[in-house]
Amino acid sequence: MHTSMPSDTAHSGPERSLSLIISTLAAHPLFGTLPPESLTALAERAQINTSPKEQIIFLQDETAERVYFVKQGWVKLFRETIDGSEAVIDVLSVGSLFGETAQFNDKKYPYSAQMAEDGAYISIPLSFFEHLLNTNQGFSQALLHILAKSGRHQDQELEHRTLQNTAQRIGCFILRLCNYNTKGPQTINLPYDKTLIAAKLGMQPETFSRGLSRLHIDTNLLIQGSTITVSDISVLRNYCCGLCSNAYPCKDLI
Amino acid sequence: MHTSMPSDTAHSGPERSLSLIISTLAAHPLFGTLPPESLTALAERAQINTSPKEQIIFLQDETAERVYFVKQGWVKLFRETIDGSEAVIDVLSVGSLFGETAQFNDKKYPYSAQMAEDGAYISIPLSFFEHLLNTNQGFSQALLHILAKSGRHQDQELEHRTLQNTAQRIGCFILRLCNYNTKGPQTINLPYDKTLIAAKLGMQPETFSRGLSRLHIDTNLLIQGSTITVSDISVLRNYCCGLCSNAYPCKDLI
DNA sequence: CGAGGTGTTGAAAGTGCTCAAATGGCGTGG
DNA sequence: CCACGCCATTTGAGCACTTTCAACACCTCG
Image (cartoon, rainbow over the protein chains, first blue to last red):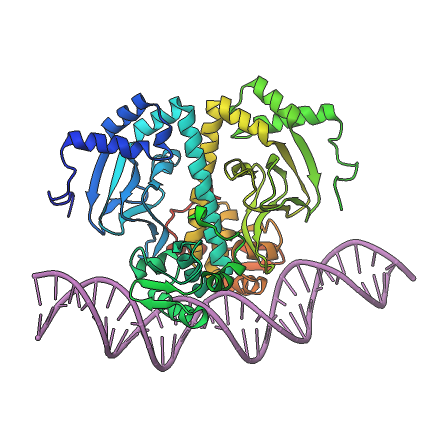
């Protein structure tokens, strides 16, 4: 079992680690609301972990000790049934908070979390998180914003599953990776494994693969491994966005 | 267009209305956290509306003026695309809050809301809601709880769509209407139209109808109109809950 | 080179959807 | 009270989409 990265990673001494944590926390929409002294107190209690792909961060229904956020890489949130089936709730990018709602769920995590790529995360004790919530009006306001936004994101996800077919969901996923100001063709890279994208979009890997080919046929998408070339954004928009209630661009909902 | 109910409804005078509103608010997990003077101030600004089936309460992307909660009946939250397709986000029962996240969404409602049955709702000005959030620690804590819980509910919904087939989703829906302490057969009533249940579960009315017949075959469910007799809960559990990560009973997630 | 993981492709089997038609309840107007 | 129309629900048939299972290609790593 990997518990830490090899020593070639730069940040290992507690000193450097502390200033790194403070600056990272300060840039975060939630922790950035804290006054400097709280921020320092928080950073002193925080841990930064570099962590390899596949590593489990916590499991569903485990008693929550810490609250996390993504420092680098991607984190998969998922739930598993007795049968071994798995549903991916979300795949989080840098800056996303997770495990924070355990506070309101009998201190149990409502999902499992796992590194989807090599990366790093920062964690803080749940007790101190709770303390900040109780003593800092701005902090709980910021958390309200985050939870509300995440609720809208989930609403949208559910809408997509209800109304869009697989090719359209894939198209929407790609569309959000694009720069919506670019007029001509543009090239993007898929952020993580195709298998994981498929799971996040609620389909089988095979279906994802076929969906991509269909997008090639229907919207002239070019696929070379994990590199996708979109010849014209508006074609893709016409293909996907008709069956979505959101106005394009809908980036803030990611 | 109906804007109010016939005068045979009991509560019409402002006096009685105020005390009714206060007692209703006080019983609510969110508003119940308020000190008496805030509660009174809130009630003075609140409106109670009785409202017929089908009536639109607000539309998606409309600028939010008020925050609502269900006093009686059922409220459908949904989103519509340009094509006229509709995705039901949720169907809310008595006590549920809605429109509250508009506060964190540029003051725009993230979904449309409509009465699913004749009923009533109470609403308060968004500005006062905001004021309460800013001045009352317990109030924003309570809202955090509510939003976190709603997030878990949405997680579960997404999991169901991903892992369960239509019959299992219907079975799960019925299971939650049951009394889980009863050993023998029990009879329950569907809370609202089958068409709406179908939409909430993300399927066509025809599929819902067929799913029910399949449940009859597979789990010995008895269907008489909107009355369902479950002969044995554990049979239904075996049928549905294997493809869900939650432990039964999972009522608190409704 | 071989092993294992990742992604693609083909064929067959479900699963749910669409369209169309029938059924049945319920309220209204005669 | 009955006929009618409306609406929700059911049923049937065919179709479209997605999954499943199996096989294969490709790449990386040892």
